[in-house]
Length: 95
Image (cartoon, rainbow, N blue to C red):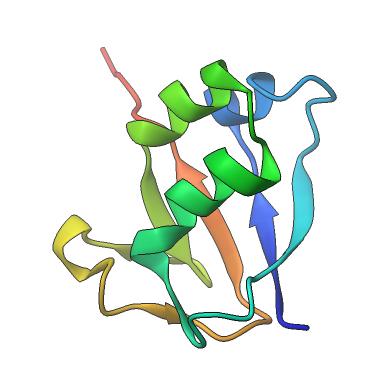
């Protein structure tokens, strides 16, 4: 089964009860390969179902895959085959 490693930082990490900094997640068998654009829904309905805070934070996140930022319009074309390191990047504010 194909797996990805998720890295959690800031608000994403604190929205999880155990506050893990990373998690291995098995990708669903279908579709294969799995488009990044479907990962948000998969995480909120299957992996962390019922965690409304996690869902709210994740909704505002950008993504990086293997340390490369993914533009919103490219999420549908980036596919996860397994072995990738994926990070939801929460919005940041500066001063």
